[in-house]
Length: 476
Ligand code: MN
Image 1 (cartoon, rainbow, N blue to C red):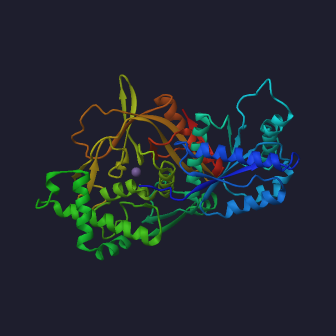
Image 2: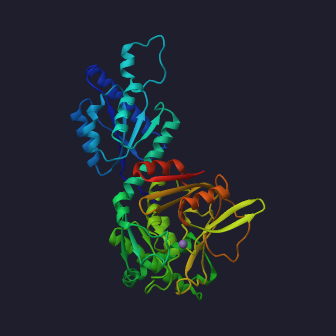
Image 3: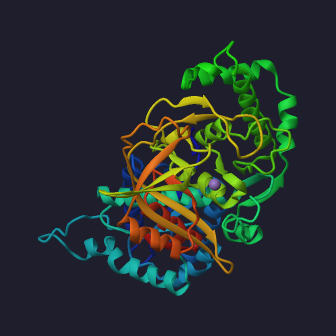
């Protein structure tokens, strides 16, 4: 599913009038060349828009205000091609609430030693112009990313791309709505937290609904809608024999499809792109939502089990940040350890709800008993995760502040068959090693619920935390 529609980044170049209009015109052409180059990079997921080269405090204030009011604009790249006395920027920066990427580049790559004169120097002054600007940002305590290097460098494109994805996450989380069907699992600590403070800090709102709100939607479904979902199941998954048409458990597959449609219809109605369920508040639902939650995550919804609204918001945010990368990002739980003679690993899984975006093959659609939830046997997708480098991310409420905890992990191949474990799973090696990573995670107060991503890395989350001004613990 695509998330990024018309989002854009504004590019502001700062200058002054000291060197005349002709020079400003040259600079303006250079800015257009730089933007054209950045827009051609596959590493930057949204388009960058040109704005007029600014030379006065009035122009700076106007440009900053316009970008700030543009709903599609998710961040601003700022570059001083020359010395732009920074007191001119104070009123504009006060208006700017968007994430800032301070792009410390220079139009010319190398010094033309035999030809260099003062005209050349005047048009290539970011070495001191950007220092003046950055002093003001530090003085005003404005967080930003600084990207350094020539604008044609691949690494520069990569860093701007990473920051852009963080800015997309920030754009998303500020307006995100999370629906909770039921409360948190009783007596659990880490899924609790201050929802009011979370909204003040990150912007996302969390509101409670009832599982019977889903049930009401189910009662209004048309047969044709349900059968089209069932068709999708048959085309996308290997359906176990019992669930096939005419077989004894087929009605359970129909019930699962109804739950999926019921949840989706309700979320659309209330405008929520993330949700939680809990097995203790299932109301009239026939099954604990399994395949339905898995498929909704694949469509881009954030999800947290047992009422975990923080991980639900984080998952939706990270899915938006990862848009178009397509390796996979899922809700996850550190479940079971393997203390092996060749090293220790963690089996990540949940009783049902793992996103098939991380599946390494066509998922199997199965039905098995589940003692938890006290309902009929739930239908679920079963698969192993893709292998490769990834991250585990946890957002916790420490009472006086929020904290994001990051651990670099590697998903490794599960060599054994698991004939009696009918849930999706991933086998993870933690970095730098099992003991240090696990101790650090626990000391930092990290949750057992995480967002596991094969799409994003430390850099994306660190940039996000910088924009959000939230504490970030990095374990690697
Ligand atoms: Mn759980």
